[in-house]
Amino acid sequence: MFWHRIAIDLGTAHSLVFTQDKGIVLSEPSAVAIQRSTGEAIAFGERARTMIGRSPDFIHVVRPLRDGVIADFEAARSMIRHFIRVASEGHRLARKAVVVCVPFGATAVEMDALVREAESAGADRVDAVREPFAAALGAGMTIHEPRGHLVIDIGGGTTEVTSLSLNDVVHCESVRTAGNAMDQAVQSFFRNRYNFAIGENTAEQIKIEHGRVYPAEDTMFEVKGLSQRTGKPQRLMVHTKEIQEALDPVARSITDAVRRSVERLAPDLAADVFTDGAALVGGGALLPGWPERLFEAMGLRARVVDEPLLCVMRGLIEILREPARYADLVENSRVRKHLE
Image 1 (cartoon, helix red, strand yellow):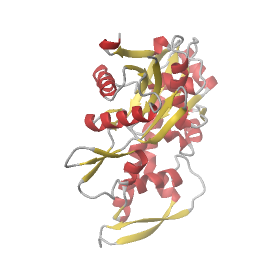
Image 2: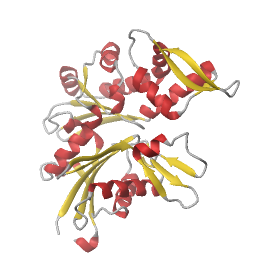
Image 3: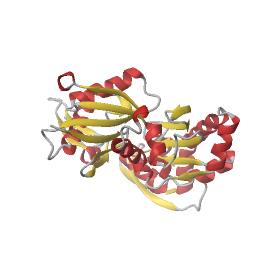
Image 4: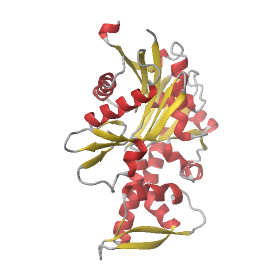
């Protein structure tokens, strides 16, 4: 028997799965549709996400992770089992070695819970990697050198602003305002200003298509929803600058986290960061205007990495391919006793 190696970027909003022989085999929302009467998982990923706000009462759609850690253990086990099953096609008899990302702010208890759930879902060996390490490697940073690097990871549940040097974290500023908080801010904006209700998926689509964190040309677009005054379907014409206004409190919170993180660095490390600039990764980095906002706020140059949604996975793949080189970045390694 041999090891079949799998990397999982388990995100609050979106997850990716990679195998050494096939590459990325799965990229989908972190969602599970569950039948209430039996507790059985009946759909995963995009199919489950499309059921949010549209499913009958006997189906419950769950996002198993909150702020990057497990919030619903049964749903998380079902989702991870689904990931491992998809990744193991053609390798049913092989032992499964899984490397998975966890937020830097995850506690030892939360990490152990994730490892146990992965084992329960069929993994024979589970290695956990703190997300900033994978993000920095995926962004092409040489974190083993004695030089300061800054990674701004705007995910679904959390934003982590991490400075690294010599294969270690110098400081990490973690705030629980990120993509999901932006979606909620858009929903709240329509509810409070227009007495108008929109669904979670609609809010996310508006954020993706019309959201910005720095001023740009104002345009108008149409939104479909429900009037809370009449209870009837309604259409609104809305300015894009209004969506920027709705997102501004979240963007300000993230900008403040970047400022706090840089202010806590030693002078030489801060000089490195301002010389080399920061890397923006994660789905939230795709919102236009982050480089301009950060430069205006604090003079920090920042670049959005190529395919920011894949950045953490690129780092995991590098760790998976050269485990000996990155052994000091891996935590919580366990193998089932009967395989030792």
